[in-house]
Image 1 (tube, rainbow, N blue to C red):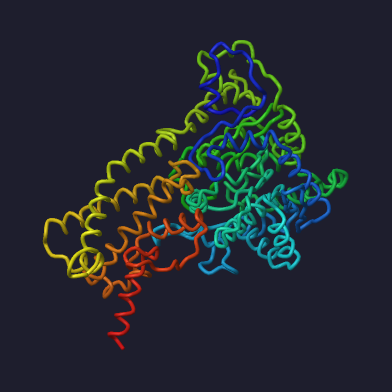
Image 2: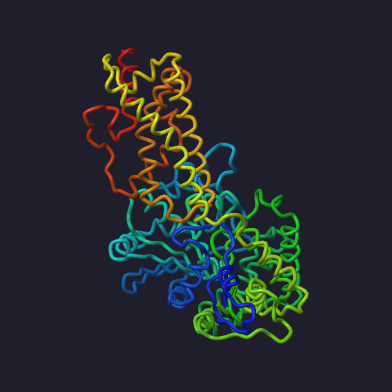
Length: 575
């Protein structure tokens, strides 16, 4: 069962039963192709995507160790990576985070690079990044990926164990590639029991690019593998290698797994307690423990024999991993890594089943009903000691503040209030174009005096800039609808603002001599908002850069026209 806050609000207070698998309990602001994680979870639970992905993971583990396989079902292409990879706890790069280089091979992951020097660089797991680069350099992989992009409307990357982390890297590569080439292919990544991939900067970069909804990490209740990298590997490295070998044998075939030498109960208990202690420390430290540590991203579906709950807030994911781990055992933590086939089958079959509240658990409100059902889906009774903290975790994860649609409506009201500022600049532009001196819009503003009209236009320019900078901040923090940057109203409004006001910004830049100290406008002075608006416009309209100039240069779609003129004039002066 997966429960959402919307279902909590809709459920009748006297209801005593509900579906065993509901739309997802949503948590934070990571959205991309789906507005909320609940939509992603309900979608996956009601389609064969989970079961098909798991089937291919099994095939990849059995038939393609250290490699991948490709399949196509209708218009959906699948790429499954084997969970049997040549990494181990004794490999320093298995735990170590390495930065993505500034210049990657073929431009890998370029949208994920940090936006400023103040940010911590994006870092990922070294061993698996190296493993993906080896796969990418395989000619067979490139040929098959090219064929999939030609024949598929959607591509799903999937993998079990470390293969899931490789699938995440592959999905990030393809998302980066598609963004630079404007190819219309949907991407989704589904992992099963995969270890963590990168640091907080990676999580933020994925959030900034609005790719969070493209990742779904299925994690069983007690599985130790997704929790392993929260702890340092050095003290337990000698024990991790035989544990991975046991899993690898079992992934190839359950019969081979019977031949593998299992770890002793004492060693399993040491590993279990070691990771549990570090998980507890991370939860207690909260945000203070973020720097330099691994951090989850995307949607996490926590599954058990009773159902599933979906969480997409990183802090809540870490806390839920800890709470569920506390009620597990060393043996369960190892066995659960191999039971995803059972859980996936139950998630799909339970979609239309009914579930009743346990006796004595009938909540007082519909919201509380949803929380209790979420706990039941994880096999947690309200009477268990962990139930209280788990309920608090789910409640704390509920999205706070206004919803994205309300934020968008509020912005529309503010847009109507600033329209008079824009109108005054339009009047100024028309006045300049009609003036007898024929100086035009750009030169008039650049050579303006201290008149009230000129000062008013300059003030309005700053007011409009503040409004659109606020829009960008809301958009990048995912407080607006997932398709905000594709809504014609906002794309057209931002483009009209850019065409109208950017020439004034260029005029001010060269008027004040900023080009002498910082460099020319296009490379050194252009505001980031204009680059973002360019992306919105070209992605939505499919326009080709370099539109023909109209009668007046101030009306051209190339808003950097005057910057190019200024740069050319400066070069001529120097010559």
